[in-house]
Image 1: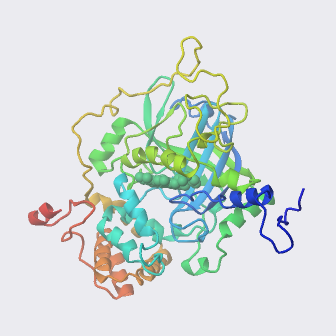
Image 2 (image 1 turned 180 degrees about the vertical axis):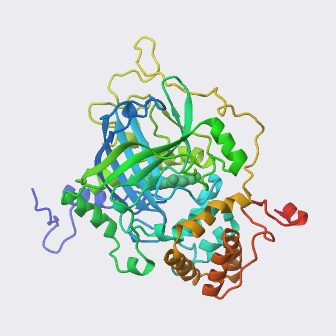
Image 3 (image 1 turned 30 degrees about the horizontal axis):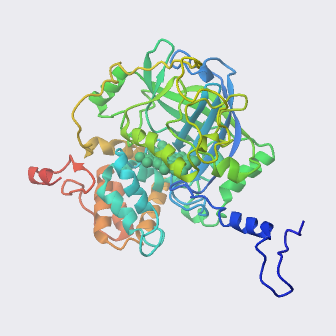
Length: 501
Ligand code: HEM
């Protein structure tokens, strides 16, 4: 056996030998060490732990995991930033991903959430466009820190993004650690109970450590891997981070009333549900108590999808959620391969085996033995019949194919206004203005800034005026006179403009 550091050659100065299998095998595997990084959320880290139900939800949901106090399952959590590449800075100003894989007795449930209750879009067709503008420029390859022109161009053409923009440029845009942030499903899901009735639901994961943030200034003094280090070291010293799992629920009738009275559509991810009306109900607790042994196998290869659901939890008609149901398994097949579900970190919990009708393909290492690979009546398989509500009201979807009418309405600015007027204190407002103005300083088109200030003016005149002062650019008096390339302007001030929109 040659030494691992030694190649074989023909004589002291001769060429290398093809028979040196060790060298050839080593180099050819090394040449293939990289897999594609995630197209978004590429930089991240995580840990293992467990979930435990403290307050059963069996009146609303038939999932066994929520059926009784003390029901437990192993979990893996991955935290991330959105826009940067795999080696980018943990403290970038960006939403944070907070994904949880619950390995329940009934299969894996993935909660693929962010640290903000809303998102930039309400039509999934916009997602790739949005993300392209948050990444590097196709020619200069510069990120938005050096050239924020396309970053702001997207937002000034798509004003429904303003609520999430307020969060991102507010204190929540740079959490001081992964341990100090909440997670939100953002989307509306459905909970189905044993009787087959259902309610709409939003999930909130509340940090027991509290929340914290870094100023723009402070963030530049941290190491690029500061969040990774913080989580790893906390778990190593036995300081296990914990979160409460809570739900907000709403009946279909309440959903209709919410639309009638407040123009909040439960399928619109740019709005959140008022907590005063739909209070949080605690269901259980999560704890992270085990660091991974191998980052690549346990974090890089983990594959989350909002479509990985268990009986009792179903998707709603939220269009962005519907888009995500497709996109994640699709990207996993590209990033990890067709058999990504067989990888140990994605497989069902130990003692439970995958049982579906998928067979063979590259790297099929749990190929389900002699189990019938079709729905056989000779060798019947047992499966739990899933209660669905396909024929309930709010489950009837009929109509002609239509384009998504993404219309900007005055109500789109109500919740961002609450953030500005009631949630941000004076110091937070000051930081917000500095964060936005600082970021806009590398935007080369004044018109983009004028438009964005016009959008902010619909949130608050005070906000817009302060931003005008900070940027030295006079913005539009509102959006009444603007035409958007990404949506209809339902606030256009006259009929000619309305037609142009
Ligand atoms: C990751 C697509 C919206 C949260 C990803 C990935 C894709 C994707 C392709 C990479 C997955 C991988 O390679 O493993 C989309 C599309 C969206 C959308 C098409 C809208 C149409 C959202 C929203 C949220 C979200 C609204 C939060 C509420 C996440 C998280 C990850 C992720 C947390 C990282 C998962 C991980 O840790 O592996 N998304 N996304 N995404 N997305 Fe989305």
